[in-house]
Length: 181
Image (tube, rainbow, N blue to C red):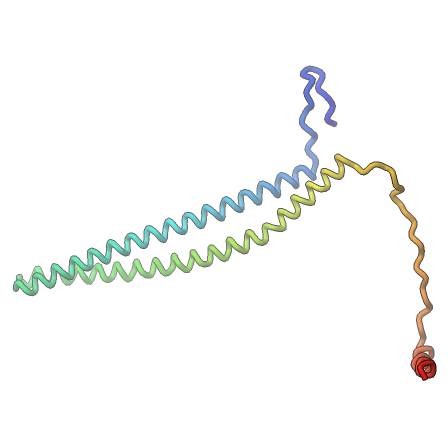
């Protein structure tokens, strides 16, 4: 099937067979799985980093708001300004709690993702074995063994002893005991 082309003198591509298709599919699927796993882990890390930065900024704002409130209380500022600062602090604390919940959920997701990635890649090892078997089958087909030895070698039949019946089984232990004496 790989005869030379009349016009160009080059060998055309080999005919695609189901073995070639299986080989290509398993290789491609394995590559896509590995890429998808890397991308998912990368995205999860980015999300965690973003949440961590937001958490740090929110804590800084909270610290500033608490300092401002303490300064207003010590300088006997009007009650309205103090209440405004207290409301801001309450809002920041609420936002900080929500952000902490989001971080906890993201951490849980990241742990589950890492476990899923490990399991996926372990299972995908089966695809590598299938690809390897397809490679071997293609290689064997393309490079058959020389016909030096006959394919159907005859085996010597095994000598079989007749199965011992219940009467013979009872007789054997006694016979062995007599031989040992």
